[in-house]
Every structure is written in structure tokens, then in C-alpha cells.
Image (cartoon, rainbow, N blue to C red; front, side, top):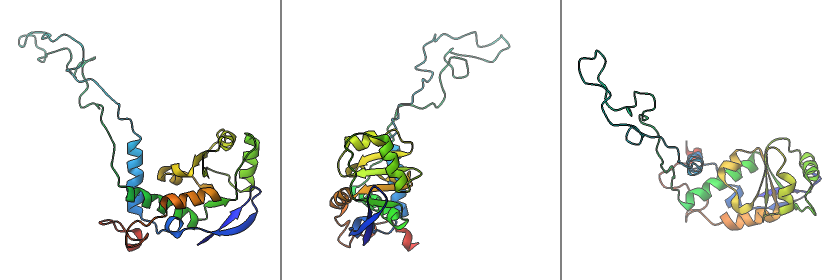
Length: 227
């Protein structure tokens, strides 16, 4: 399949051929959802913690005698029913990590990239090189390309001047091709990717998912086209 290539002034220069195994995959909603949930879960620290009645500091003596006071029986001052006592069923440190196979991660990334191409929300740039960091110059480039909302700028390798030029612009993220992920792609409106980054993405994720081809669904998971 072919996609247009633009210069920094927003003018279409040519069309290049891209790998359909990366940019032409049918959308598999089940896999994309599972990978997105797992990525968000793996980002959680899981350090929330509270003290139960065993961990709270306080005397363990019985507050008053069992009978004859007219009040309800009471034990330790660390009881969850009393102020300063322990917490009932409070959170404790835990791991939220979910394991995913490499095949699922790659398929989900291909699906969201392909969806961006079909929705015309992916623009390929001839190159993106700045001699020095200039936020105004980056803003002018985005305006010329018609980017008025959130966007991800993808380069083949980390470009220091590009990062410094765009880091103060709201809604703009910058990353090398090797760090593209499902959550960031789904959270932005546009993807601006250089030709070199496209070729690197094809090299990273261009191999077939299975012997049946790039469009073959994972075992036990039906694609959205089958529903």
C-alpha cells in the first residue's frame, strides 16, 4: 500500500510504499483492548498501604470490664470501630502486573497503526531535523501540517533538538519508533512519523505473526471482522 509523504510546509511530495504487515492489518478489538489494559496495569506502582488493627500502635489492654457498665463490650483501642484504630479491608502493597506474549503486543501495535492509516490520522514526513531547539519553529510546522490537537511525533532515533522544540507544546509527545506503544497511540489524534521511522518500524514489526500470515488471528481470540 502507498501513503503520501509531506514536507515541513505541508506540501505533498510523493508517495511511498509501506509494509502492509505493519500498516494494513485488520483491527482486532479483543487483542488491542487486552494489551491496553495490561499496559495501564503494568504502569501502576501498587504501593498503596494501610494499617490493620495488628499494625496500629496502641495498648492491647481491655478498655473496661465486660459487664456491668451499660455500654457495649469493647476490647483493644486499636479496634477498627474506634478513632485511630486499624482500617478494615484496606489496600496493601501488591503487584498489578499482567503478562503478555510478544505476539499479542506486536499485533496490537500493528492494529492501532493500521487504524491510524485508514482514518487518515497518520502523516509521513520527509524528514524532521532542526539545527537548534526552536519551539516557535515546531509550532509553525504543526500549523502547516494542520495539527491542531494532540499528536505524537515519531523519529527513527532520539533527536535532541526536536525533543526540546516540542516538549513545551501542549498535547504533543515525542518518541523514537522503538518506543511506540498502544496507549500513547490511542490517546492522540495524529501521528507524525518520518520516513526513516517508518522503515525502522517495518524492520521491528514487519515479520509475520504466524505461519498463516499477518492477518491470522491468535488462537482462541476472534478478530472484530469475524463478529
